[in-house]
Image 1 (cartoon, one colour):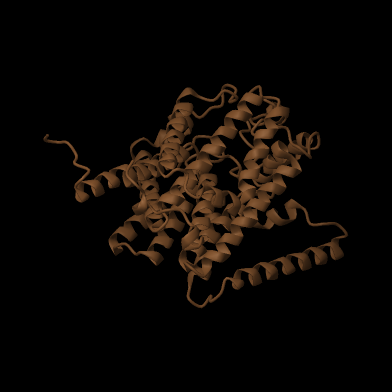
Image 2 (tube, helix red, strand yellow):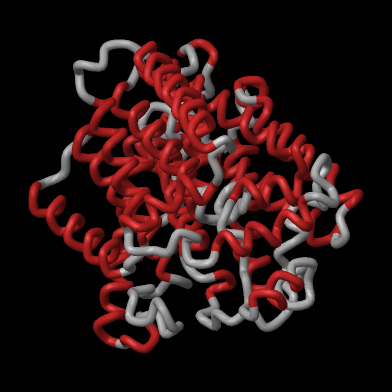
Length: 449
């Protein structure tokens, strides 16, 4: 019959395999990135006018469809070597389990449970991308870069065609680019990640000079147009770390350990010297003040310190277990309302990822999270002997992520782009440093269902 596929023909079978695997994995990655960077619920109405506890119907449909696709792809390979992934960084899954337990003492249990489902869905997506890109991780990162550049190009066009929509209008940041994204810092961070991906791609599998220059022009236009100092800092730190590590003169993974121990020793020495001369320990303002002045910001990081002081009132009431996963910042009328009332403006988050984890998951949750990061770093060290460029990329992304969370709230905000990227990085780094006889089957080895 014309138009019917003959699976007995090896060529047709290979085509069916391509359609069943590569196409859907690519679609999974594209849609995940698009949903993560574009405004929540694909709504460009940015004002927080109602409680966020229930979430938007569009947003639920978006992520539910993506999670379903990830589950189908995982089921197709029968969750190959999922046990190895679980044991390779058990603390990632421990964080998810602890978040689930926190539902029982959360003030808004349904909201907390919904976010736990999203967390498990993002981990499943990360697992699927890692398994299917086993022998071709460069393709995953190249496609991610292409998607981000398309979003940034759309942002440039939005600024040119509709400046009212494409630029910020709030006092103090008016004129800064936000493009098709929700806020200028989101545009800036997206540009910073795209710049790191571009640099990694050029050192691992170079594109043509004209494509590289075109991508670079779009990325830098959005990065500088956003006027986001935190994103600029993210870009400088991540690129500096990547360039210093991917070069051939770094011969061993032990180099990471030496650098870490040296920095830790210098930090302890600086703390001791500061305490000796000032008779007090180093405070947040002492560290962030000089840095913020470099970027033309106030020493309180544009009011962030006021938010942090008010956050401690909530943290001190449940500092061991936390108040429940994602149970605090729920918009007007939620538990965080008292902060907005004091500061006289609608505060959307703490602008500090670690304070948010401490508030919602307590000391126990924060410890589990840092253990998950530590195990990820261990996998990066192991990967260095196998793939120097990829290891340097993961390390640069991780350090920049950890630093940025001192002024931005992305840690454990599971559907934010940067946190998703970290989870994907965790799974890919773990898969890439597995022994060949203990790794999941690659995309080309996947059977046709």
